[in-house]
Length: 536
Image (cartoon, rainbow, N blue to C red; front, top):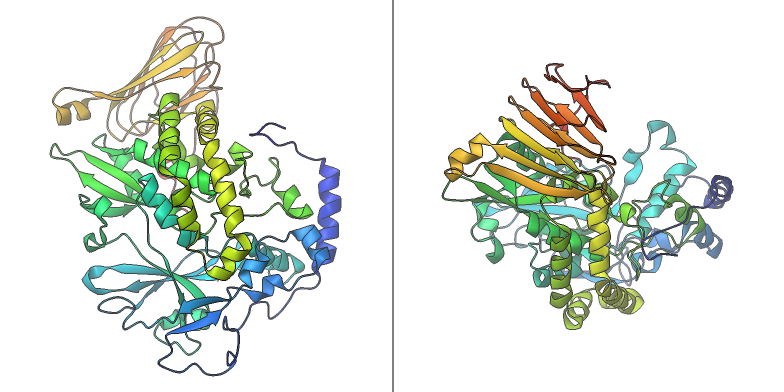
């Protein structure tokens, strides 16, 4: 089997094993979660007010399973969830200088989370290590055996993995948060409406990148912080705003190396850097490292569920990178917009640089940040897998580039642009020119340029988002890369000089002027790139 491939089993086998697995799950459990994370002597009594730390476990319920259950649903990280760790008690008045107070509850479907407010408008995220994924199910299934299944799958995550990431990110040159472990008292009432949901739980506390006072040394020049939704709105509004694509690639390769598959656009903040000429550069800051070192396919049912034709995004962290489209699945939207300018050589160069930066010593010290009992169970294995993945990082980077090159989507902005496309039998070159950019730069109107090769690209999509855009298409020959053009809200114009082969037109407002070109052949595209909102 190829390093970057997987072969799916038969559909009949999937159904048989799934049925047996559901039979092995048993009835839905009413009191599923542990009432208090504390273990050991006195753990069932009141907690003294001055207690500084406790011995606790992230979720003992996941480890109370038979070998038969492991066969069908996987062993995952069950031992880690039940491993005793020492955690500082959360004292809101002293946990940071100036103290913290309750802010708004979190809005995720699985995470038990909220915002805590500190001095100087600083904000902190508090997230329970354990999850409650019941809201991901339709209401009709929330009181069935299926709820057992989705809850049990939480054990595929490494609950303490996020604490190992900061030194690795620092070595890689990627901005990062600084999470720490805390225990929320069973009688804590200072978290407002979320107090009861957090009581007795182990949780992760980390500062958000919101206030300028939160800037770290590597972000010292930032003029502000924004969400992915805000960043994308700005990038699509004007060519003066752009993503720092080389730094985003560095962050994405780090994600893949860590096996962090859940990297949709809601998993990023962006540092805003304003330049003297009025342009703005956005640098990515990854957050929510809940899925690093994910282990899912070690049971028959999850193994089948994670096949390419079912749910390949549930990607297990192994010595090999495995099925590339699955590992990249959740980040496809932001990858298309954040890496479009980069070449195959850029991917190879950044991967080689990361290989040099992520030394054996750095890896070993980072994984030693796991609690001692957890390191004893998993530390050496994680170190070995990280070292093995580092060795094949350049090959993965090539596969990553080729996956993105299959069906690129290129968008303009809300201002008028000129798309110049030169088509050849073996390649297609796209240039996007912007008069608005020329005003900013003093004459340079070239906003984007990239060449796509027929051996790599299945089809190419151009999206006009707004303004009176012009598409100038030229070229003849066979085996041209199919070209899909979507007109935007403005009155757009197509100028065709050459073959109509493989050219399809779509338009939102039916005002795309296409003299000398085929008429629009399919229904209007109902939603363009700038319409997508951030996922939570």
